[in-house]
Image 1 (cartoon, protein in one colour):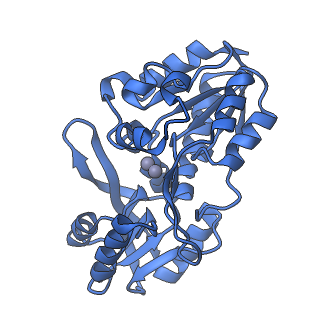
Image 2: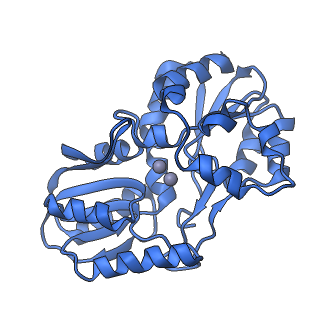
Amino acid sequence: MVQLVDIVSSLNREFKINEFGKDPAFSRFIPKAYNNDINWKKIFEPNFIELFNGLMIKGYSSVCNVFLAVFPTAEILEKFIEMGDPGDLLFMHHPLTMECGDPRGKWGRGFVHIEKSLLERVVDKGLSIYTCHAPMDYHRTLGTSQAIAEKLGIDVTERFIHNEKHGDIGIIGDIKTTNTIELIEQLKCIFEIPYVDFEGINKSVVKKVAVIAGCGDKVNWMEEAERKGVEAYISGEIHCHIDNDYGKERYQQIKDFANKTNMSLIGVSHSASEYLVKKTLMYRWFKDKFNLNVVLIPQNKWWL
Ligand SMILES: [Zn+2]
Ligand SMILES: [Zn+2]
């Protein structure tokens, strides 16, 4: 058994939660996603409602099991509540589910908050939740893109999508020479997905790749990668399928780019692209640091 406060301070140090400042995405989207009948400011920890990263819900003080997931979907929280003993901790990347839509199915709703009854059951059982978003996307050794680069055996030549204060979220480098079709098969296997999202050109030689976990659907990022000689651009989302005006506009921008690019654009789903780091780097981090049982909770469906 480990004290929650020790795990939290270790995570806060590792990800520099306080120094990072407010999460750029969730400081905007959490207040927007919750409506008035959920008093999230009262349920979430005071430091969390300032920074939108770190310990979100504080349960009992001793932890036996740590659960790792990426999004707080109803399915994930049901499993955590059922399997977790009082005091156990759920570590995730997102505090809100992100539905980007299924390229072969329904378009998504964008950010979706946690249902009130699930929040109440987490609190009633004395369970804890910790989330780490942007500090994890930028992290050099425990990052979301870093995990993909390591799994693909990328020989990293440069990092891009730079922020003065935080560093880079994208990685560029060389893989063992392959082609688009083989690379797609390899990605389906790594991310355990039934199909990828695809745009652009089918290439007979792929050596230089770019990886961006999560939403890589930004034309200027793709243009930058192409200028740097990238042949395959791998991301969670190469175009979001979010069912609103914003989503449709973004979708069209990528479609226009895809018609003229010479790269392969490959999406492996937002959630699977960001789950990998839990399965590999974070799993090992928790195992090495603490004498705890670490349990992975994969989603049934990655294309949400
Ligand atoms: Zn991310
Ligand atoms: Zn994300």
